[in-house]
Length: 284
Ligand code: DGL
Image (cartoon, rainbow, N blue to C red):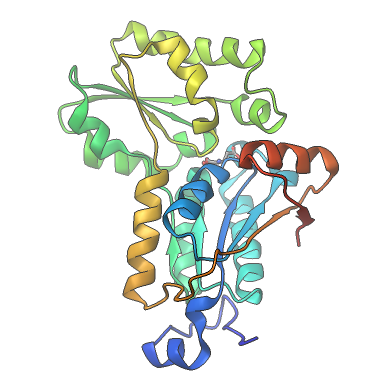
């Protein structure tokens, strides 16, 4: 197996290197604090079926939304280093909280393409009829300067309400997305936004698409709910093409799943979300 540079070596991919080492047939690393990133991975699998995908859930440390920026950066570096050891050709940070807190520093130290998740603020502002948009995020994202700057950049003439949703990721991670508790918590976050006349809701955490139906039930079908899985996948596709890293085999790519909290309960939860039986390996 060809080896790739460690995350801190500053060796950049060249076309010669790609040809010489067949890097384009190496896997793509995707990670999140838990099962949220599976919503992104699902879309990647559909759009890029020949790619081998490695998924890491840092479940032992979820939720990232309640952690400090320093802690998130440390975990992101550790996971990225591990992907590099596994010869990943690109990394998808399938987590809004990790993206806003750690992607800039990660890109300075890593040589392979790193794709992050950004909430769909711009398209939401464009389609909102009443110019009232809400963004649902974790606490760590709501307090992050990079995120706040992004909102300022795109909001123009629109009222943008940033709604942190503490407690929601925990319920989703504990397989309680369809519980009365989950509905109650979401109602508490969403009703005040509805009262303000919000007509477009941006899901600014990759866990939240897993409760999209509950959100729709509370807000009604007239409210538009925006996700980011497809734009992230398209950005990954562009980056792979740019660096000549598209997998050129015709076979179905392998999907391998890891979690820092690997146990039978987690394996069941992953299989349920992925809608297929799978083996969950221990990370690291
Ligand atoms: N899924 C993540 C996000 O997109 C992290 C949620 C969390 O661990 O708090 O923000």
